Length: 247
Image (cartoon, rainbow, N blue to C red; front, side, top):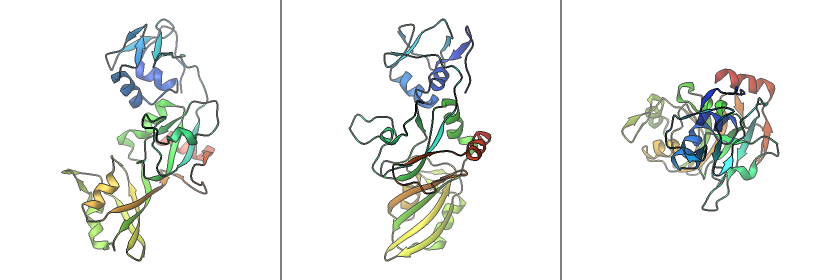
């Protein structure tokens, strides 16, 4: 995370991200929603810049403090099931922020997990790091335990290993293996490099299997470990080093 120099022109999304308010992608959504103002005027252009030390920026009516250098915080959190991966929810559902660790840093989630899915998600106060980790070019492997209804034939999974076709678009090859079968339910271990919206449910549905449970247990080299639902931990120095290097 960097600090800005007075008079330096900086994209508004970057200032919002560095201030720990939201990732750059989320900052763009705030701009589109008309929630960002520069010198009292609503920002309309996505790539607009501001002059540090001269211009005044506000988000949702609150003045943004231009960030100075601060320590990067990264946490691993076990997101509970039936929890939405946003800081708040107008529908009143439980939001992931309810389970954030107590810290002076303003955290936000890196990426997302479906409302009814559970497991590992990373939190940080560094908007740039979050953006880098989410960028498709990094293709970070993410591991999931998935329970489906029915007895899965290993041959059937070969189409996923070659790259599943979802809604007429071919995706990156998937690593998948059968763990065990209990009654008429099958547990799978699945690794994805993309993780597009509801990808696991959609690609298994195309094979005729209904997903009943999804639990993410790994992101890159970071694993869920002994965390229980709703718990979090600080990444170790080695984990942080690896994740910063990969981004």
